[in-house]
Image (tube, rainbow, N blue to C red; front, side, top):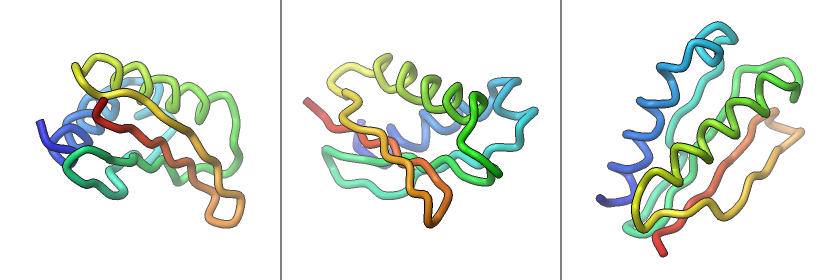
Amino acid sequence: MKGYETAFDICDKVNTDEKIKENNLLIYPGGWKEDFFDIIIKDFEEYDDNVKYACEKVKETIEEYDDWTFIKEAYDEKTNQVEIHSKRM
């Protein structure tokens, strides 16, 4: 699976989670290449346990895909969003 296909598939799966839906978190692919993608989590007031839960769900879902691995998570205070990066290994 290419980066964009994998990123969209992961977002579709994660966005069905009840806790994520209850908290109205916006989770979507932010960018991709053949062997890389990032997923963005935003629309939250503060970086709290609900956002951390969503980050863990994304990372767990990434690990379900053969050849793809989580590489880093970054919270940007200026934009108030989290980016989760993954790479094909």
